[in-house]
Image 1 (cartoon, rainbow, N blue to C red):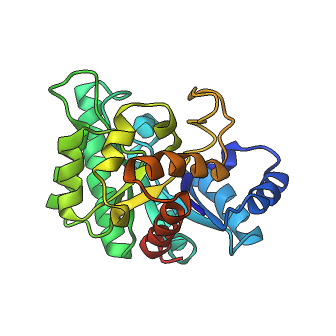
Image 2 (image 1 turned 135 degrees about the horizontal axis):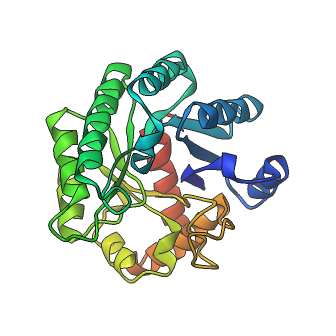
Image 3 (image 1 turned 135 degrees about the vertical axis):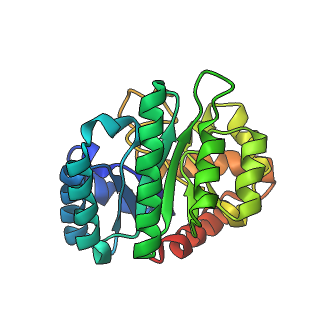
Length: 260
């Protein structure tokens, strides 16, 4: 099994942890870094585990205040310099739950467009963060999909998908992959959405160390990559297939998407 999205730099005692994950059947992990410091640490981990750790470089939309124009330019250069060492750009996108100010939302869109164009230039897949706000009229997911279409995004995975059935259909119709995180183990919405998602367009992720399926709390940093097996159990039930079938297809999808 392969965890298609996690954040390894937030996990302590990583060498001991990785040994445990391998013993539990994890074949690879894709870690997402959100700035230069995070990216540098992630790439150093990859140097130590080149056949196990694969790196994405991105910018979480709720962190836009950290990036002035100059800092963003510096980060883009860092991404370009490490093109051969990464497998995707992400996570990037829009988040109206945490970014509620209209001016900041507009800046998020500008940064997002710039990163999509960068991915096109570097011929890299995109890992997308999109989360709607509390105001029903504001759909970050709709805006995200529109920006991706307008800027001719190629390979796209919707990380930790949180949209509704209409959002799901729009993404699937374009050909995007839908990534389900381990919160599927305690929500009512996600198992239903997974039942509407073809396995051929599905990825599994933990978003670890967050979204632990055992504690059910985002703030408890106890989730680990091997726990995608718990998500696979939920999906196997709604799809009426075996857990191993779910893990095989989603792992194959992850390999193909990230070219690993």
